[in-house]
Image (cartoon, rainbow, N blue to C red; front, side, top):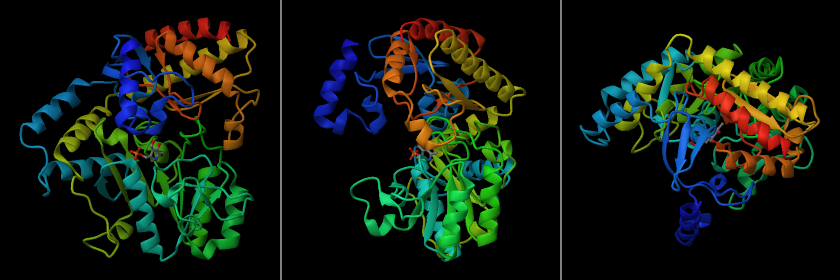
Length: 426
Ligand code: PLP
């Protein structure tokens, strides 16, 4: 760990907190973040040469595993023709067509450079299209760091949102209404109160930023119905779930059609890409066909499009999702059995290839309060134990884990072998 320690110390002199995205700093679990030198298949390798089975998968995108050869070659080929043109390219057309094929509710799609840009732009579009100001989001859901989305619930269910970061003006936060995930009554109440001015509901259809919390039966359909009743748009933030909880995303898995969809991460095969799209009659309100402004110098970047196309093409492999899902289930079932053997209060959630581990005596975790009430001290101990054993989980208990195509039965078994040692010492 010596080299990671040296780099972390050096990084903190020139980068705030030593990292370019806060969760990487290991604040939630303590200790030194591992600086990563390379990744391959299910593994990442740190700068000290230690290998880890990786369940972060670059926070989701590596459905096919790290360093996929077809994606890598597509990037190298595209780079040979130039890195960015600021003009339309053939690859953007192919990409838009591919996204439409995989996610049919996205009749039109606009590429951006990150998940944050996708959600921020989708919300501006929803407001511009409906002529309404407010948005409804869920406590514990994360949609990137745009001002109107960095807002938490006020003190009562029906209070206006309050900024969750300095720098977000109250005047912006007051338009964001935060309600409880998996609780339709809280959504109905807020619509009863402010429905006339609500432009949209934005939701992670499987919440992946408060650990992993799938929707309870009827929740997503309920949101669809409420939006229809009040003329609000339903936005699925599928930045994590897209192409992951099913090939067509959560909307395919749960058979609910949103008005707008946000994508990120997976769509670039690991390159910095995002996208938003939806009904044609809504998307044509975006510039240059409509008045809602949205733009990006590097949007639709040729290297990112090449990587994304190579990634999305491979998702059609027969049986791909069935086998990833089976391995995910084997993994969480294995964790549960080991925790039970050791009498540790513990439960798991999973949806497709996303999973969550909870140190709690609650049977099924379905909301934010239950997620944050888990035993943090035990998680930290577990986290460092697994890290020592060569298993890299997200360095915070509020993050989902991800399984790739290359986390086969042997990798799952190796992970559970590590877990047996760690649970025995908790
Ligand atoms: N939406 C969700 C559901 C996310 O998980 C994230 C990032 O983790 C974002 C949006 C923001 O994406 P990005 O970090 O690419 O801006």
